[in-house]
Length: 239
Image 1 (cartoon, helix red, strand yellow):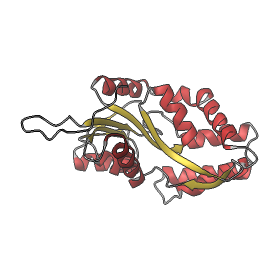
Image 2 (cartoon, one colour; image 1 turned 120 degrees about the vertical axis):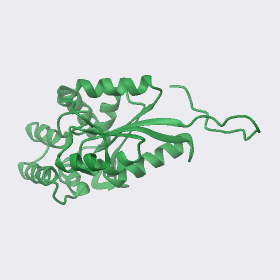
Image 3 (cartoon, one colour; image 1 turned 90 degrees about the horizontal axis):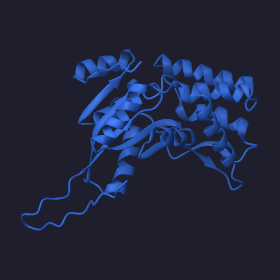
Image 4 (cartoon, helix red, strand yellow; image 1 turned 90 degrees about the vertical axis):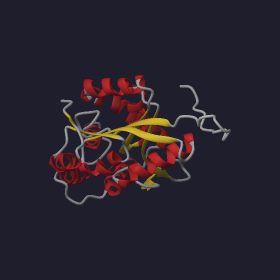
């Protein structure tokens, strides 16, 4: 896509360059009608990459997430990655890409893909913002046609193996806002961008939705639906 000129001349009578307009999209439960972490766990278990015990831990975590109970996003990634410590990051990234193409493509919502196209036609820079693994988000962004993606990275040791720890922070809740701000400031410059549209399904997306001039709750759970009603946000049904 064309580069955005984020400079302003400051000359009298000459208007400043327009701000870049962003459209930010959550992934799990918004663009796809599934949870990528749960599906990835099943995929790893069936293909012999992780133990049944690790899979059980992830599934129990998923139940807490669904029920809006306290959950540790960083810990659940450790459950999966610790069983994959014999593989390099490049090998795991390859597995994630294959998993996306073999499994997640069946869960894409046509209305979500159409919304991305509409935002692009409206002149927006479309960004995928997700707590999912970086490798899964990369494959998703390529499949959808996103301009950029922001997702959770895992730390790697000197041998190129994932350690089970998160590199930085999980891109969830307020972390999504920080990730968008860091990326947009670096890409366009502070003050030279605005979030025009935001789409999310979970109550943890509230802060990211609050960034937008036009926030949308997509097939929201009870908590986000209540927030949307209180704040006057439109609800979209993409099923």
